[in-house]
Image (cartoon, rainbow, N blue to C red; front, top):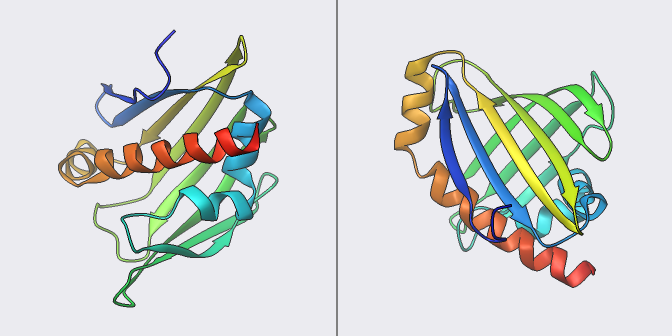
Length: 161
């Protein structure tokens, strides 16, 4: 099993990015951190000085979700989508589209949580509509931002144990 804190990004097929990260916490805590607005607002906040100003989550298939991040200068970045699968506490699938789209099309994100010996392995797969869209995402600061967020999440999970 991977060491906690080490995020790994790999490419799969023509259009997918797969992120894995082990958290030193039970699966139910990790699930709650991904599905409860009060917890998401603590770790999914973007770069320093940003906040998750709008955090509406979905709790069943067909629900819409919406996030809007706000920067220190008032700039906003919004995204949302529709929940396609919702199987607590192990699997969630949802579409993803940014308001000011920086890559073409819509993506589909899948989160799978597997617990072993009190640790939870997160596997997050992002499937883009095209290889071009994936390449644009890879050239962005997405990987750095996800790593920063998951480091914050580890801290939130530690405070919940």
